[in-house]
Image 1 (cartoon, rainbow, N blue to C red):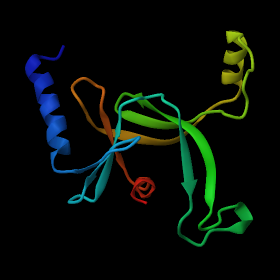
Image 2 (image 1 turned 180 degrees about the vertical axis):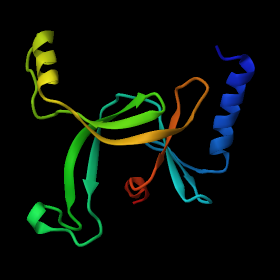
Image 3 (image 1 turned 135 degrees about the vertical axis):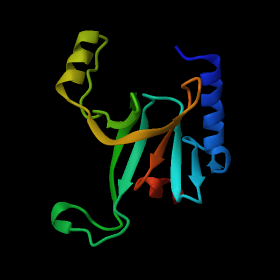
Length: 146
């Protein structure tokens, strides 16, 4: 059981963590730590579905395997999920659906066509009330700086 002091310390720690970072508000707010060269994405609504677009902006690419430089990749339906001190970016199955009111049919489709974990992030900081979670972006940061 956490003490009142520990809870207050966590909230102070969260506010202190974001204090000197540049906040960019949006669908997903993020904080830019210019000194450390890091980006921290704030997640407040886990398991909310959103569209994810990937691309290969640089490099030589390869036509043989479909990695063409400068081309957009697939658009994916994804969601963030928190598991302990990790946050997963899960790609949801959007190709097969049960067009029915029957919950058993919907469950059968969900179990038959698996989702995929695209990436796993380590939690950088959590607010006292567990409603705000920050993850550190590494190579994904180019998405948010365009």
